[in-house]
Image (cartoon, rainbow, N blue to C red; front, side, top):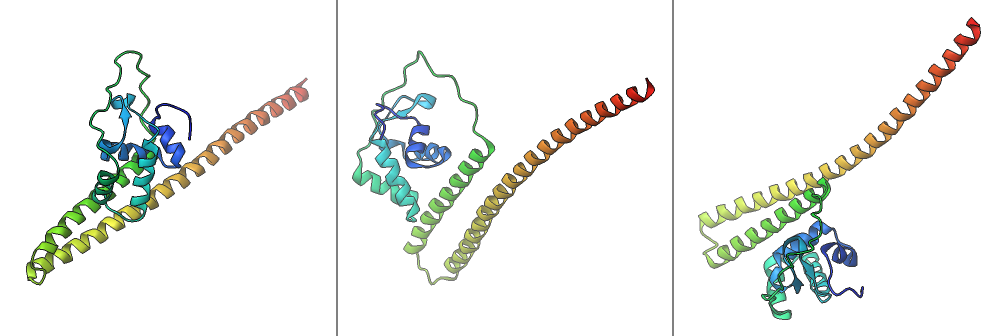
Length: 201
């Protein structure tokens, strides 16, 4: 652990070996349990927040929903309603927007979290109803089909991300080859001009 008094999202992402986009999402989703100072782009976290981010990561990897994580954080960590507002002077320069991969990753994480939360809410309603009625059975079937479609969409997004990365790599190779071919063409033109001059003189 670094000796810094406060940590940025990037610091925490490096500390826990997580994508920055994921930490950004969690810092908003579970803000009331994360000890921090400042607001907006100036928001920084106290060192003890690393443990809380680590707990969030562990619980989500174990398959818990955001609601489960929130309940667990409520039991283990106090609310952080008294975050210190950011200073108005000496603000850091605004950072550029994240790359497309970060945006895609964040969108996928948000979509998955929404799907989990909606599924959890509907499941709790269905458990309270008479599950033997035809209407509930139809709803359950529809929800299962929707869940399969969401899973397929997430899988397709991951596939497209992989294909996009592969195309980027191929494009980089092609650009390098084009540069080499242009250089070869210039050298060949120079060589031919020199030959023509030597023959004509």
